[in-house]
Amino acid sequence: MALQGSEEIEEQLAETEDVGDEDVSVSPAEEITLPVGSEGEEDTDPLLLPWDRFSAWLHCICVVGFDLELGQAVEVHYCLLLLLFQKTSICYLSFPDSNSGCLGDTQFCFRFRQASGRKCSLGCFLDHFDRDAPVCLKRDPGHYYGYVYFRQVRDKSLKRGYFQKSLVLISKLPYVAFFHSLLKLIAPEYFEKQEPCLEAACNDIDRWPTPHPGKILSLPVMGTVLKVRIPTCYDKPGTSQLVQSTQNDNLVSIVLPSIHEVDLFRCFHPVFFHIQMLWELVLLGEALVVMAPSPAESSDTVLALVSCISPLRYCSDFRPYFTIHDSEFKEYTTRTQAPPSVILGVTNPFFAKTLQHWPHIIRIGDMKQAGETVKQMKVKKLKNLKTLDSKPGVYSAYKPFLNKDEDIIKQLQKGVQQKRPSAAQNAILRRYFLELTQSFIIPLERYVASLMPLQKSICPWKSPPQLRPFLQEDFMKTLEKAGPQLTSRLKGDWIGLYRQFLRCPNFDGWYRNRTREMINTIVKDLQVRVQQHTEVEAVDLVLKLKDKLTQAERDQLPLRPGTLTKLQAHIDSVILSLPEDLQGILHKPSTT
Image (cartoon, rainbow, N blue to C red; front, side, top):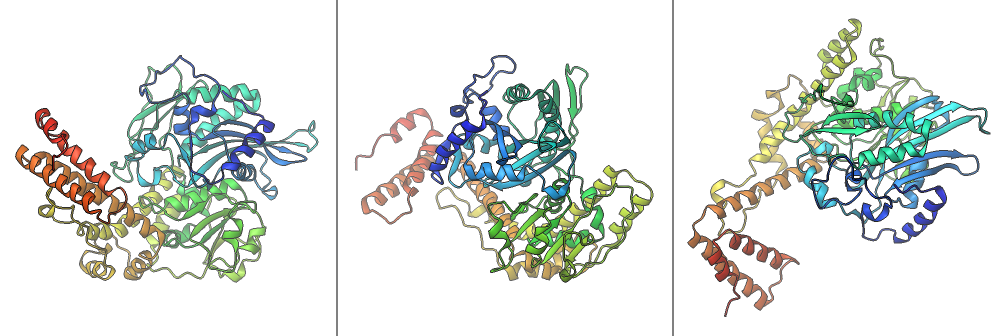
């Protein structure tokens, strides 16, 4: 494994920075100098290069320390290179703000933008696995996640008086619970045994199977086996298939019930009287800032907010931990325009003043244990928020569209009084959010399904039929008889909520995804119908298509780039479905 010190990294980063935003294809194998071990699991895919398996899970591993002269600095860096601005972002995001006072071990996560134009050579290969993943668990095309294990302990032998260091995993995968569990195994060993421990962990990870949704994966690392199952888009929402540990396991096994879920009840406990309003704010892509005393509470709360509208994907930007050194600081804090559709998690008191013009602010105090009671708090006016020391609560002038659901509040309060386990409270809250989101989405799904062309209009002799356009007023008319009232007991201005939703990024992302799925369905139906036709009909189709292709080339018709290439590819696919003797005849160039 190539171990790079800070000086080597600086030189390589300087070189890498020159490429800037150019379209660069990076192969993990090109940047690793150690050979892969021959022991252990064999490569089942001959196309995988050394360290491709590692790169399927992680982009790189960094160790960030504190230098008295330089401040935060990357001390050790494994695998893929980072651009200079990415390295700087990681350095600042890997340490809590000085006011947080995090003594001992702290875990949290952050998210930052990927350099535009950079591509990974594994892209197409990994897209194959993303296809079966739920929308909320697909690789993030424009951002990286950073998973941090930070340690701060007193050490009189150091000038600063404290040992401060972070082990950081950088990945495109939003597997929060999984990577935090992985860090709990690797980080304590690293702080005790240093670099050899990390090299061993990297070699273990490079022997892992690729992250395939639906399969039970056994992932050995540091003498322990993590057993996980990545959900699929075909799983029933709100259910999970438990992974069982077998007696045949030679190593100690840790079974993870979920790879991505955070404890919703623990995160929303300080403000659970307002959970329904928070759900609306997230659904509508409103600008939200979470002010918390530590990065752990900040990142957990932001992740809980994003996941509360699951299975709908949150399509705006979100930053579980955001600092004044972030590259988007000026963009997100400017007063010259309205706050963007983004959820920020902050801990620096400076943001209390900088973001006081934001419309919705959640102030989180120290998260209480699940058994402790919480006093009911009213939504407060924004002018009452002066500093980060202000009382915990929700500061907003927002008026919810839906009437408050008192039943869920009473159910959670009763659980607190009866000391119901936190896992049970979390399950109740997660089920509530799921049913609320499904009640909202089902009418949209029903209407969009009606935009599909009829089966009889799909014909191999004609162009694929187009989807009918989404007409807002037509959709609104369907709500009277087939609206959310069929599945939800909540009353309120559902129409107003839908109108606002249709203008937000979450609808745009959802509709684009559904449109893509329906177009793929039409294409598959077309392919099936072509295969079901007789040889005579298929030959006739090929000859007609060839005539059209010849005519387009001869007359130089104004077509989009790549259209003729696609048409030729369709012709070739039809020819390949025919017997070999006909293939030979049809592949001959025409004599006209």
